[in-house]
Image (cartoon, rainbow, N blue to C red; front, side, top):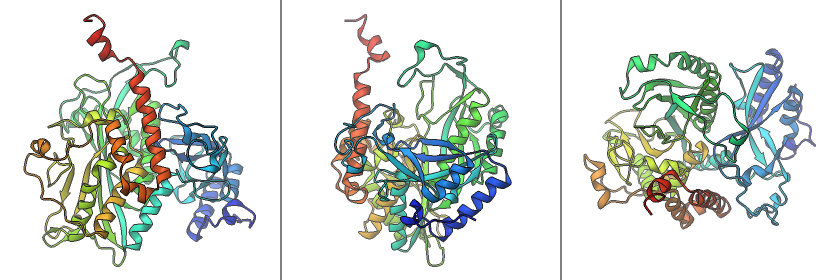
Length: 484
């Protein structure tokens, strides 16, 4: 039996309730029963990427009581692993005094997320949350940030429900070795080729042609207990869409983390590359998106709060109004990469302006609600599959709850052609730097997420933009080298 020593970090700071303590017992029993030799303790960073230590069973047991030391320097790194802050400033350049000098932080596993990885050798997997050494929650931990918004929903009498619809590419990785001159920061992209022909939407033949890897991915996802709903052939060559049944609370975001990690590792074992980059440089490419299906469930009785006799309920309309009002500032959380904004193209099935419509795939917010439909919900189509799932969900939930609390009334729905309204409507940001400027000046997310967190995201993304703009691109070479 695990004993929470009163002097242990977890007990001292009251980080486990009865549910987590019982889950810790089950996890330790599973480690012993399955004779696991490694437990991957995962912390999801600000980019949504899993960072981890491979821990021994003994170290895992210790982490459940005392936490696990982990480098706090990760939050100082942008998407290319470059330090973007004044790292050795008094507060680590992050306005957080406890982060002075690149100190360690403490990871505390959430044992409710413990899994045995079906493809790895005697390996377990568990998500963790980050705390400062004084026991305070890490102010830049995105999983903790989502929990704050989930608690806000509960105070209003609701539980957040979300289903995932994610597009990504499976490509052949033709890089057999990395030459000395090919290391980099980041390194050059690997040589790739196409696994399966595209441009036959929802083709059984195309999908079956990738069965050698999709079957193993399916089996792994099912073994992990993820709520797999469907696998579909998308438009591009080797482009796949996977959907998951709705789940509540943290579960959808946790599932996205585990799904992306599983897909990349299963493909890697086949000499393939799974990429959640929104618009890779492939001829005739079709962009990948992440459509977030969401609703609220009443805590009292469990009914869908978005379901109404005439379609979408008043609560659902208020939630929609909140998302529409805060859509521009939300963009950085939904589309955090430079590449993702290249998806916003007219008549591409990706949105290009802020609007909503009933059952219209060209709208930013698609309403799926028939009269009396118990599954009525809203589908936000603005996100990219590389988004940090905790931030994407938290931004949606916070905006929707604001709409409910303020009893906002949404604007009229768009007409049958959502793209035609761009000239007179509100265009979505067309670049990351435009989106960052909106967030920087936005009072709402500064209030609900805090100035420290928003300033952190803004500084990090501006650092990435500055690196991008300093590079000489292939486009510039074609445009200027010979002509001028």
